Image (cartoon, rainbow, N blue to C red; front, side):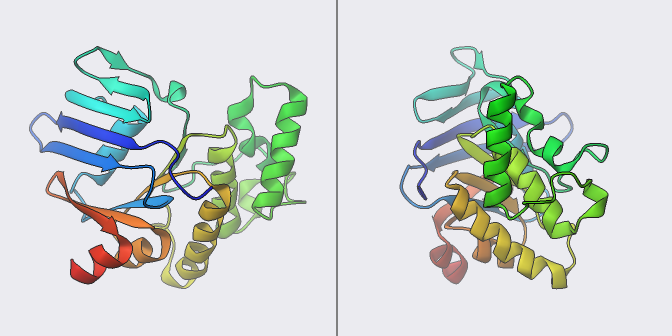
Length: 233
């Protein structure tokens, strides 16, 4: 636990009609940390990179692979859909279903699994994220921090090989942001799932990451430990 079991390779080009062109070259070896933060200003391409890894955007050319599994290869004509990449995705606004209970939200992605397996996984995740006793409540009935935990539990329910988080704290005011940031870091480490996290906030990057890849003008500028990148960059 705590290390990326399979190295991530991203070498892609993505252009938008009438807009910017992005050229990303990112190599994340198995060693080096559990949480990799993609740090950069708005418009630098962080979310585009994340969406290309997820399969939500199709690169014009290049390669995306995790370990020995190729997710996208323009030369070989490989382009796995998101559901076949074994990813967890946590959106900025958490995207919980308001009409479903917390329990139903958590196991939503396990609809095809046997009932006994769903219930066992739900109990495990409720315990991991301190949500025991809340499974019958609805998203509107709980706090912002609890909603984040539910969204994270749902993203991890299918045991993904990689977790993707897009600005998970951006909607929070600063007084609430600090304790939830600390809680998120603790849960990411506890889950043991390698994570790519997008943020433009250096404080979030410092608190959440093991290593940082800075994204500037549509490309990866440098990759290193949190202290190396933030203290010298």
